[in-house]
Image (cartoon, rainbow, N blue to C red; front, side):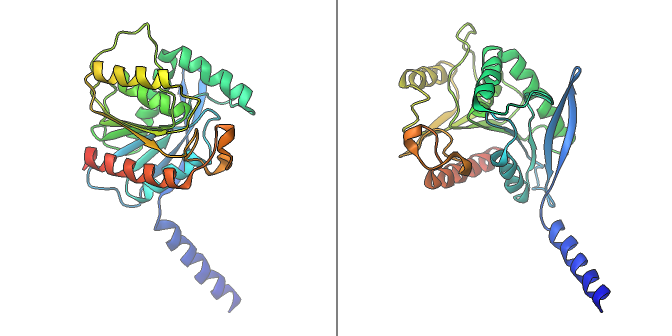
Length: 257
């Protein structure tokens, strides 16, 4: 009787697992550098086999990026969380995270290369290369905008509380992917001058862009682990997180339906 009961429980567990997406680690490389991304394959893909590439915040792959991958996959999207830093280089504190993310911001070609490699893994994992959207959080939001600036073969990008700065030595050219920026209205880590410069860049680039501000929201407003004290400049905001997620879904649906 006991063995029979355990067998039934095991069967129900497997059935329950199969109702949802499957997320698994994927090893890939940039030359000799080992990279460790996460691929989430939907149990039932949407008709277009659309894919979402997720660029994590400056601490690297975290709970926020993982949960986003899982939630999007449960909705039928193929997802891949990129590893930008590579094995052996993951930051253990914000000081190291600032140093590493700063390197890629100051060397955008290196950032572009890591994004392209992750995009390749997403397509290898089953996504249609003609139906890809890139999203990113904080440092990853900057990366999403960079993906648009260099016109990667994607439909659009979404930046959540990302930095808006760019390499001013590069000429502003036409931006083809559509752009959505979800921005905390009280995010003092992104100065007003940077916001105005970004908006002027979008106009000069003749981009199809939108920038939405969320009241009482600061940096990292989508991350439940960011705390609840906005005075520190980093805090979770449930309303902003919920509304920006819904807007992102509508944006993706518009592009890949």
